[in-house]
Length: 354
Length: 67
Image 1 (cartoon, chains in turn yellow, brown):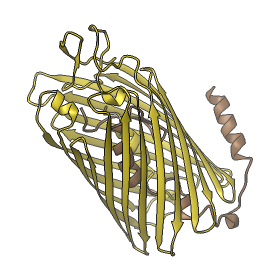
Image 2: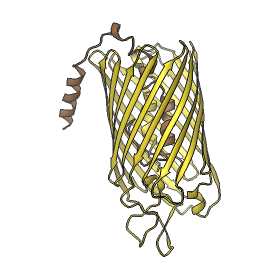
Image 3: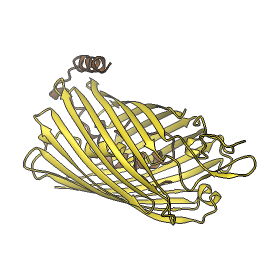
Image 4: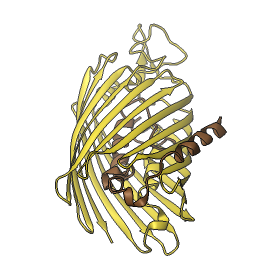
């Protein structure tokens, strides 16, 4: 599934957390991150990101980023499609503008383009956020649209389109002197080609057919998050997400993290995340007979995963550094070709501010 | 429905007032829910390509490297 870009966009464009109006003209930062995902299903992804933000003389910040994913995979998906290990790069570049409208409101406009050998994507996002009750609450709304052109490597005759509309309503509320609660609801609707041109389903007679998921999908996600200060050095971060869509997928995500300031500059964070979903209504590992909708996408099967990780951060006057290691265990309930998977995600981030 | 939601939000927004000089804990970097957008982007990048769910952290969808 490729339904992520605008989701990241709003998070991205709200990057610098302070209000634009509160920031000093000419100030800015450059961040670089290098991350590696590797799993025991013969897949690795090396992600490199550079992101820069600067505040203009007027209450406007400009942000630009570039990202490269270098993907190498010989997973069971790839091998069962009778192809060898593939390697490809995805290149993404984007820009966002945030403008302060008075002291309490800011507006965001962002654009991101993503390209790889068999996929092109253009994403546009707009948003407005307003502080309420003397900065004890914040309300935000956003809308995004993505147009995707899907291809198939070495097959110029294959071309399909996928359009996605998304909207979010967000609310943050100070509960007391130590507690902040946030709520976020996301609604998205995708129309167009949502399968993989490389994946084939098997029927009982060993007949292989292209997968045919529905061309429309409406998705809802509601997240509640609580940040609680347990003292000046320690913070608890807990969140729960409920997700449901009209393909029959229902999921629950729980995440807990605690960060502790060892010194004024050094912080350690420990976190755990659990995820559980049931399969899409039409998902089967093999079909007795051809059906209108068919898929063997294991991301649409019943499975759970669990993640645990540690992050160490250094925050200086003009220079930050962080190192992170996460381990993830996946267990698939109805995907016999791969009962489970273990992944390791490591990253190194550097920030320079002026 | 949307008017009701706005009314609920406005009512909630008025129920707690912590003044600026009482925000020693709330002002900590770790209490900022948007403190690490790049980390959040990469985390989202990892999970959403491998799970059937998206959303709850921002708007929309689209564009990756996983077909």
